[in-house]
Length: 219
Image 1: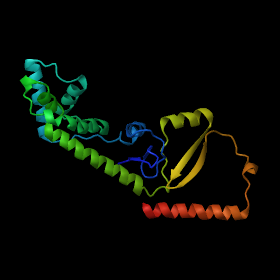
Image 2 (image 1 turned 90 degrees about the horizontal axis):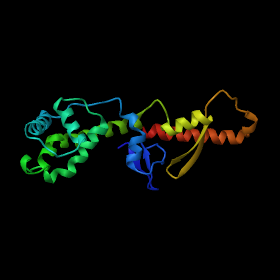
Image 3 (image 1 turned 135 degrees about the vertical axis):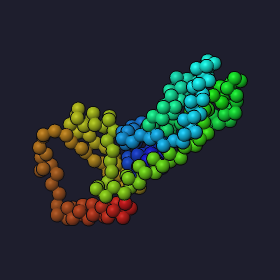
Image 4 (image 1 turned 45 degrees about the vertical axis):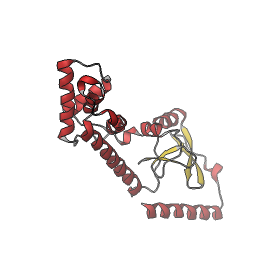
């Protein structure tokens, strides 16, 4: 999956991401734009039928079961709307309520809400689909041959860069750390502040070449 846990228990987005998030949910939320382009409605017809059955019962008999979120989901499935990754993830997480799926509609909320979320076929589809989406995304990150290193800017980082004109981040890769300074604006850099000798240039070029070869080999 794109959001991976680091050795220091923080989370990063992709293999080459920076360990900066305190939880997986925070990582997912910060990188939600990576999933925003695609939506899906290839869930089975039985999931649609389950949702329609739950809605019909509520309309004809009334029901205090569930939340507005659950009934919104039922409406989406009944109309066969396209679902985002985040919605599919919520469907997959509804698996935790499976033990109540056989409760009759007129005896409790378990069965009707299970069907409102697509029933067994809908939830199982969501679990498979979520894994498929994340595997494809992770593959795109790993195999992107247009660059040698992937760094994803969060909205907060972009605001700091645009607001202050610079942004300093710590990039961690394996057991190595690198401090990178990004600048934004029209100010010219005073190159005399960064003078280094020929030997240092050669060492730096060699190191960059090794990093480049490493990422090409892993892609």
